[in-house]
Image (cartoon, rainbow, N blue to C red):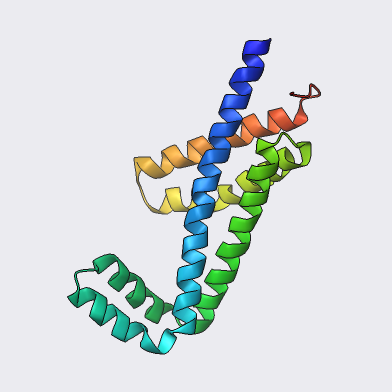
Length: 153
């Protein structure tokens, strides 16, 4: 029984760590989109300068920002920032063993499913199907954990 509880903790912490990594990426996207919105007039200049300096990744981000426009950049910043915050709260509370955190993590995992499914259906890639499968496994496991009547210590 103790071995099952230890395995459950290990798995839930692995799920939480993966979600923390996602939250960090979303926060970076949010900050980049806010930067793009604030400096929208100079994005074309940034793209050109970064392209000449062999910073292709930054250059392509600036180019994509100019295509999105300032309103969509601000919406992207807001949505990705809020979702990252939600993930961080769910991960923190789950790590501490809070029951409400487990349920919030279930919600976070459930919110990702439709987007991951749509992405996997439109882009044929084994990587996307693996990510979708891992999300489903995490959702089932976290739901079972949240529903369990036995408390972990």
